[in-house]
Image 1 (cartoon, one colour):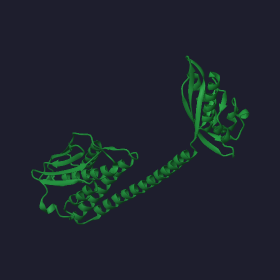
Image 2 (cartoon, one colour):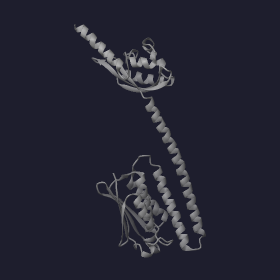
Image 3 (cartoon, helix red, strand yellow):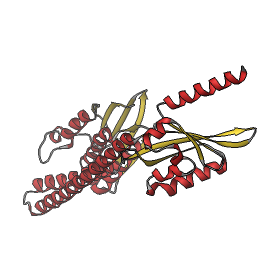
Image 4 (cartoon, one colour):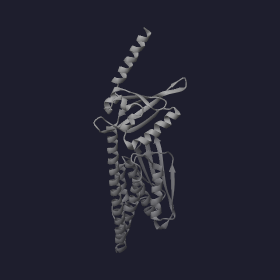
Length: 337
């Protein structure tokens, strides 16, 4: 009776394996395969006699054989599980990608063989390949667009500088030079942001510190110093970090050019902190003369940055407060993850 029961269980197990929605195989310790379930045989369209041993390899794509052989040989030698993907010829002649996963069978420490299962991943690989191609094309287009924008910005900077050198009106010349400087500084910010990998977060403190130092260096006010105080680390996507960096550009340039007249010296301080969970605070403050009413107008002599900064703050979804006492203090608050 026990023998009959065991035979029944074995037959039930074989029926179960042949009805499984995956292709299953078994190999001995020498890697020679001695069993394939019905889904495998239906997939290849070959009889068991042709598949057994190493005959099944005849259906593998020639380009995949060497790597698969090395992968399985190493795993068998180390008695560990392994996975590999390869192309196997279907009964209709089509090459299909399979993900083959195998685990060793040990009996009292002795390797008796391996059981493996295969699933068809052709559509998944095709979708991934298509996504990779689309991303590669997108990266190529973005690189070309960035290159053209950068070249146009450089041409614009040169043109504005040339026009400034030819302007007879000092105010117009100063406005043209200021515009050229803004274009150049904005281009530097955009260039750094472009080099950030897609989906990566930017360390805002590092970016704003670099932006502020570059802006002050280009304005060339040797008696004006910059102090940077980064109290907390904030990570933001490029879409939100970019307008904040452009704001720092404008505020540092405006402070260096207008807060310290007649060549006097002073200090510009940039602070970045998290005053509350999920909230960032950016402060740019100087100890200069403040912003006179005459410079608040959007004129060639005025501070164009005071008109640009609120627009950039809206892009960054930040609130802004300007205080004009013992210098100028601009505070921006924004949300962050």
